[in-house]
Image 1: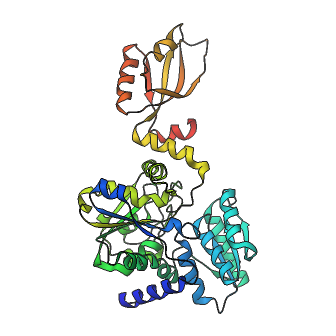
Image 2: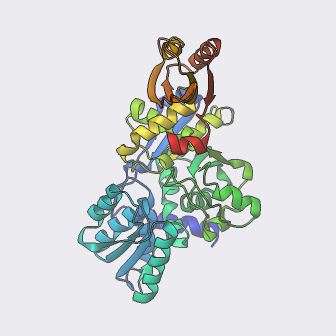
Image 3: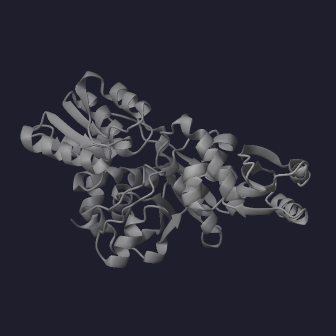
Length: 411
């Protein structure tokens, strides 16, 4: 398909969507614009009816075959499931959504709410691969239509409606657009629509670099095991069709961000701007920090891809953000088993140092005991002073804050 043909198809898809839901807002953000000395706009896909862009691809793929199908199937534990459920209800067709048994109840209930009586949910498998196999097997047995979350030309075309709206709302093509990347549907659609008319940054979570690795290998490859924290963009293998469209991008335009780092933007957007973003939805905004010199004076659009955030995760997000920012550390202290030792340690703390974790097991057969300690503070420099004080009284310690193996099991 030529670029002109794709653009026309994306515009047609966007027009059809207006019969179902309004365009999501494109809003200038003063905080970010001032901070980065640029004209920063947020494409607020978190404000769609299902709080993500996923219903776009589901709508477009379903409308193309709706005359010949009455049952649609997907495998998803998140935004794709909710988009499919919403569209099944809209079209009045039967949907079967396969989800892993481990899917949080909140996501299951939201999918039920969006789909109503039109959607049946099947919980199968501990891992997504098992769920996917079950969904595809069901399609073969029942003759149902499988709706891919990203690796489908009609889905890609539907996601390109984000770019159509950006161009119309901005009144021009932005100088630079920043996109989160998971399976590649949104980025492939946007890149196919805008082509070489603007600059791009494609942002992946550090624990799931499917696009970067595919570009390096010149083919989609499985990058398992992956870190699932950024669940909306944590994909082990980019789609074949999406990669075909993205294979020509400059590898230097693909960056990755650590999962802990993304949490700092989730918290800032929530606390300062009142914007609720899921981890994948914060990727594009966090990437601005890598691009200060590149985007200065330019018009930049960050796609906030989704806002399906489970607030039960907020303590974990805060924890990760503090650790990344250097405001929280965990260490194992070797504490002498003598009277006054604990008092000596406490004297090492400053006025802004707060103990958040303290686990001590005294063993009478030893001269020293191990203590797991967590400390929060207001300035990373406070830890230099604290550790210097601890060393001055002769105590040994091991900082385990960045030891992923230890923190996974003891924190």
